[in-house]
Image (cartoon, rainbow, N blue to C red; front, side, top):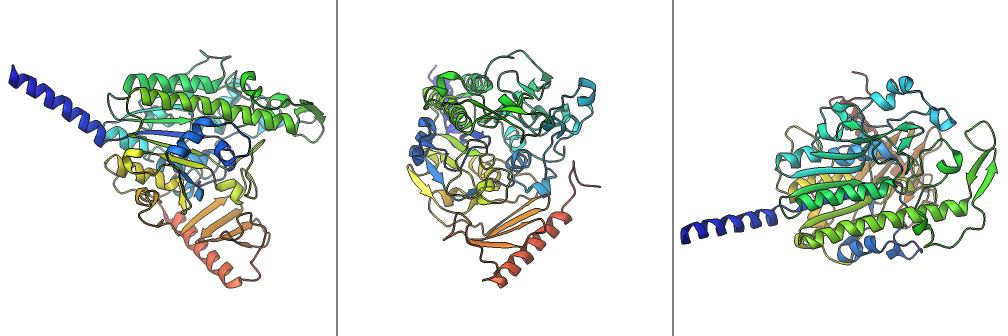
Amino acid sequence: MNRIYLLLLSGILFGNSALAAHPNVLLIVSDDQGYNDLGVLGNGIITPNLDRIATEGTRLTNFYVAWPACTPSRASLLTGRYPQRNGIYDMIRNEAPDYGYRYTPDQYAVTFERIGGMDVREITIADVLKRSHYKTGIYGKWDLGSLKRFLPTSRGFDDFYGFVNTGIDYYTHERYGVPSMFRNESPTEEDKGTYCTNLFEREALRFLREWAGETPFFLYVPFNAPHNSSALDPAIRSSVQAPDEFKKLYPDVEIEYRTTNKHKYADDATVTTTEARRRDYRAAVTCMDASIGKLLDALETKGCLDNTIVIFFSDNGGSGGADNSPLRGKKATMWEGGVRVPCLVRWPEGGIPAGAINDQFLTSLEIFPSLVKATDAEPPADVTLDGFDWWSTLRGEQTSPRRDMFWKRRDHRAARIGNWKWIQLGDQNSMLFDLQTDIGESNDLAEQYPEVTRDIQTRYQQWTAEMNAAEPRGPFRDF
């Protein structure tokens, strides 16, 4: 009996040590959240749970994403590769609904938004962690293809509940009239009418109840808040939908709607006022924050919060009612306000300091290799990653190895080399900014430092050549 007892005890201890040696991962991504939209920064937005992550972890102030809008940013996060290398270098979407057009089911079935997706040869972080015996789940916005071969369950995730394209109505779960919610590989309208942030919270909590404390897990929660609603009605789509209980946390708005003819629709349209849009945006963030708090509480109840890597950031710069100050620009632009985003990291058992502010040059490309390192997973063979392991930088042991970052969106280009930021918008003149002294990009130094401008342009051309020489990936490249 003693021998059996010792064997059982050793098995329990081994299991516990294995869990401790392999941290869990909770990766939370918001949608279009502004650089300054954290309560801890004092702009009046209510985010006690994000503030908790910042207080118990580290806030990154020099953190960038790989593209200034949804789809390519998310593909780069999951693959650790530039959009131009993994093939998702533009949006997978249809433009016609922007002008009030509603597709019939047969028409939508053959649109690019329905048939496009990330190249099946790409390896995601979920693929890697699943091979290391992590349970993997995603609840929220996918945006990388809706055919079965492109869905999360074909890309390393064990479980999926969410929508597959760039945006939805928060209550109907339709994108411009098209039902868009999936459970694993099957479209579903089972929860139509329920606010989607609450649904993603519900599913993530179910995942944690089942797996937290039982096995290492990778939980990816890409909220669509606070993205504008993707509804056909301009009064809805011109703002963010949010529950009344969260709207009431903010000052009343005198005028909710106005009429305008400066709209994509042909006729005069009723749209939300700027003041109402700002309130709605903040309410959606606060609602999302409440859901994040429940996830943290669930992990704490399970006794595994401190051995869970919690990473939060926005997929791109803020839009609509967002506050990107002190940055210039917003979502979809090459200005800092389009590509520099808020980021928080909490992992006490990994030595990440509490209450720290880290100003090092870091990007979302670092997340893939950093999670591989932290989880002792096997990195994908023969795959070029564009980031590095950031843990020693976050612990303050060394400066960031990153020296440059490059962006391309159609005919808009930008690069950061050290503290220099170069921007070329179509056929306009090149612009140059010193981010160390001019984070708001207000003082163009291109004429004053022509040699710096030429050097960055040369570096950009070299990067472009490297991307073009990479093994081609769909869906946009011709091969």
